[in-house]
Length: 169
Image (cartoon, rainbow, N blue to C red; front, side, top):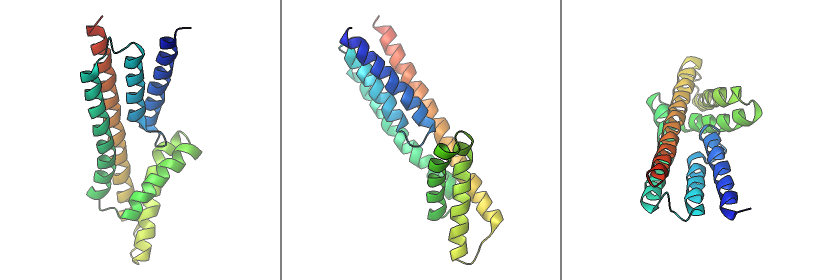
C-alpha cells in the first residue's frame, strides 16, 4: 500500500475527530482539523495545497481558540456570572458530555453554571434561584455561540482547503 494513502486516511480520521471535538469539550476540535489538513497536504508533497493556504488555516485555528474562550466568557459576563459559575459550566460540559451524552452535552453547562452560581451566592448569603438560572442560561448561550462559531470556522477551513486543492487540479 502506498504511504500517501495511509497518511490520507490518518488525515481524514483527524479531521473527523476534530469535527466531533468542535462539539465535545474533551477534544481540541479545530487543532485536530488543522492537523488533519496539514497531513493531507504533506502526504502529496504540498502539490495541491501549499504553505500560504496552510498558514491561513493555521491562523483560523488560532482564531478559533480565541473565539472559544471569548464566547463562553462573554456569555457568562453579560449576565454577571461569578468565576464559580464559569468553572461550573466548564465542569458541567465535561461531565454532561461524558456521562449523559448527548443530552448532557447541552444540559451540563447550564446545570454546572447554575450550581456554581448557587454555591457562590450561598457563600455570600444571597442564594437566588432566579438570578442563578439567568446566569446558567447566559453561560450556556455563550457556550452554544462558541460552538456555532467554531462550526462555521471548521466549515470555512474545509472549504478553503477543498477550493485550494481544486484550483491546482
